[in-house]
Amino acid sequence: MEFVELAAAAARYGVSTMFEANGRAGLVDLDLIAHLPEAKVAGPARTVFCGQDDNLMVPAAIAHARPGDVLVMRMPRSRPVSLLGELLATQCLARGVAGVLVDAAIRDAVAIRALGLPVWSRYVRARSATKTHVGELDVPLEFGGTTIAPGDLIVLDGDGALAIAADRIAAVVAAASKRDEAEALKRVRFANGELSYDIDGLRALVEGPAQTHAPGYSFRMKSNDESAAAHEEEKRATALDEADAERRGAVNAADDTGLVRQQERLHVVEVRGQDDDAEGAFGERHGERNGEEGSPA
Image (cartoon, rainbow, N blue to C red; front, side, top):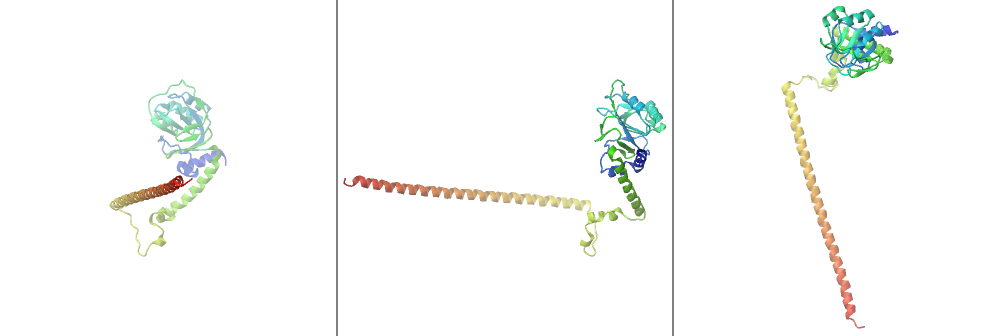
């Protein structure tokens, strides 16, 4: 499948499906304003690293843009400073830019919506940028918790923005296709009254395996009062367990102390016994010596 076809399929599947198909990776985790909420866009990233509060590189990026590109713009620090207005947006459309992702502000928001250029921005502000700092084009950007490299597939819709690494695009689109087919079948089943609670095995997770239930078993969710009472009971049980453990620790400590003292007493007795034996031996030797001194030569 050609890149253009892959991008069209990705746009059709949308950010959420592609995010799941990508192993829940690549999400641009920012609060973004989708200025055309119904728009669905996917295209290769043309990255734009601007100077702080400066948009000199935006006209440069537009001049180098190719049809179908998604301009991805940011500054060193995200601030509510406008990097894109109506005149730059008009140039984007003329160059065939598919969409714009901005980790900063835009202005002329109503006019840009009227033009029909799909734009996702962090802010809307009239505050204008300078045009004095030469930044960089086509460099990897850290963007909303993910790294976007030039040529990565950017997917944009009402759910936000997603970046797919260039070498994974085909595999992720294939996985998204399978997911989309499975969801289409589920839609039919749900429309006919079936529940994800049953067909996805969720009931067993909440209520337990059906075979363990006694005849006449009826599952009932706990009320808030019951849940609070159960929580309090659990806290009391935990406190009792802790108190019991503390008591056992104190008893064990006392037992250990008594054992030490008993060992100390035994040691004292043993030492005293050794001293008595030594004194007795000394007395015997002293008596012998005295006897020798008192005997005739």
